[in-house]
Length: 604
Picture 1 (spheres, rainbow, N blue to C red):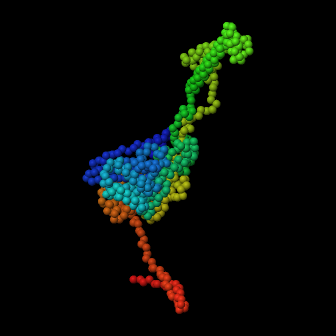
Picture 2: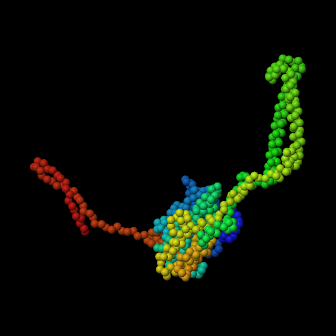
Picture 3: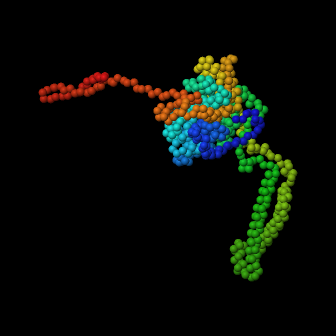
């Protein structure tokens, strides 16, 4: 994200990034010898990052980075599914997009399996029937046991991996940045993480996550993008189709910022000078010709010249056609007159009847009139040809039209101001730049009835003793792609200053790369903890302890086994058994009447 001082009085255009398909890498020998190298997968709800647990600039960085979405039409084959960067433009197929996440928890394991297939195939894993590499996978804080059980079942049963390790992405980021700062992993602090679907406040006590006091705020980058889209669509109802979610995400990443004091910053935007200096004008694509854009004086004169030339050609063609018709009629009348002169009276009278004439004098009158009309038509054609000759030489409009003069063009002024088509297709992004990030602190702006991130932080701190609060406040760590807004660190420091007691100390540290530090932290953890040790789940552990089992480590969740309450044995109720009693009414007849006897159960 760029700072707000870099873009003063500039017009920006949307980049409309188009992703290109990921290449299929060949697996390196370093990843196979002396033992298979773990595969690191940061399974994010917005973007998935995958690579090898190796050192170096090439293998030590994520090999694959793609959006965690898949597009498949209903009824299409599994092989026709497009995943991540295979979808160059998300907008045309947004209605087909599916994700494996519900908020930040994996629930759709069919899509998750497609993601794993995509990762393993593009990383060059070609072993038949199994993946021989250990897997380090990120999961949500306080991940439900059912989700982990299904994930373990997918990895161990479908891909037959040898070892799996689960960890929390923001704790891996904390692990990586502590290593950069030469801090020991066993420390106390609090992590503020904000992702695509939600945000978390995670207290860490003595290097381990305190799961009982973790809190989640259901506001993240997707809510910010939807809120910005709604604001701009209400502001520009004529550009609804152009205000897409992809462009709103670009605005979030490149043009938004966080105000240190929200209300004071809004007051600054009331100033016209401040608005003109800070507003970002986003230019939408448009076609000036197709939409009747701004036309210069020279273009208008050229268009008028072409129209006049076209009209003259049409009039000349009509005159020629009219002259030809009159000449043909005159020739026919002269032929009838010749019959009279040659003495063919009978044929002459028949032709007069056909011409609807009564006498030879009337015929002569029509001949004289038509001769005059034909002569005038020929003279007009000669005059028109003489006028077209200088026009072909390119002397301008004045020689085509005798009534046209340069004075008329000089005095001609537009009645209405010229419509600026380019400015009409601009989005003025003003206060929206700071309003979208404010929903982290005030979720009520988007109708969410819950506490903001700093209120939740204060609630979490209040659950500890003053000594623990002091230790937690001294190490406030910010990570996650949705905390990259310029000014976010300063805003949180200001909120903590107002929240903490007088003269108390606190320190806020931002991750070096908030979006990808989780992957690098998982890589460093895997390099320092070889498979089979602490934090790894083997296939034997999976079979013996169940799919929900978790081997804890410094960046993992806390494993709370599922307790199934045994049913309490109840004393059996008395049994009512019907018996039949016989009553002798008379020597000849015997009647039977049913009755019941209570049998007490025998306890052995």
